[in-house]
Length: 100
Image (cartoon, rainbow, N blue to C red; front, side, top):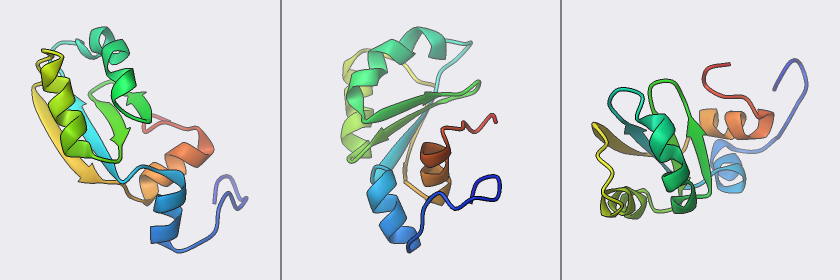
């Protein structure tokens, strides 16, 4: 649901499979370096979301995407690989960001 309208229906698992990637890589860079590296990361996943405190990189294989980040000689302060969830589906379907 978004603003009172149904944007998608299905089980949580089917919604995630249909509208998101299997995993999300959360990258944190020191001192606003996120703005500088976002363009370099775009090719590593299906989707990229730049937030004030981190970058979300959507990929089917999060570990491989995280390894690719390091092969680009980028130096994130932290890297977290996690499974996609319904929040990721909602953000994708509504076009919103976590900041909204």
